[in-house]
Image (cartoon, rainbow, N blue to C red; front, side, top):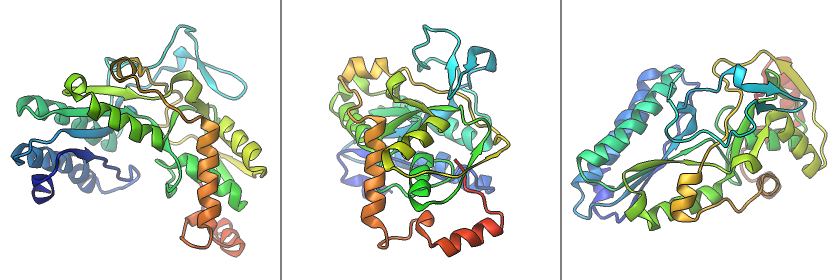
Length: 293
């Protein structure tokens, strides 16, 4: 890492590791020690590069059930004035994985301030788009699109009313560029990144949107909620928008279309798990393998 950072003019720390892993030591090494290695390499680099880090909105304390109302297809805040979770909101990791992510987030800012490294952290919720290889947790949107296009059944855990703030990956890249370009103002701080109300969608609504856009029906099963699955998240990204002028350009519908176009273009060329044959699908169903929403 030090060798790579020595000639770098800027560093992007984009770490992702499966939160379903049972290996807490590996998770700690990836998120905490890995982040420290990147920061230390930036500190030692003669070019003193800025470091931009994509963190997670999952470190925020979940909204309480009393603050939400269950409607036909989604949870909605009881307070009509709610504009999203701000950066000053309390953080409350609720799993070892979230502890490591939260520690890395805090370490990132404090190390930057202590060693005068221009660091910028962006806290995102769901990032989706083409060239995403589905994962039951992090890649849930692409997983839904691939499964529906492949004719595979889906399992909805819980009510399906859970709401997420979804951004197209290209809008996240544009946000990183904006954070870099305006680093005289953004350095040393953490910002929420999200599309607000126009980019929130529930699991049920996402499935319905994919069926409508892709003209494919889906078979749905229901299962018990997964531990730690939060009911609602919407980002208040006003601070970042005010400083940089950034705003998302791609709608939720465009995100779905782009993922679907990737699936069609890559079918038969790469091994996306849900592109497997009907025979494999039936075999998986027989073995009781569930596909997460």
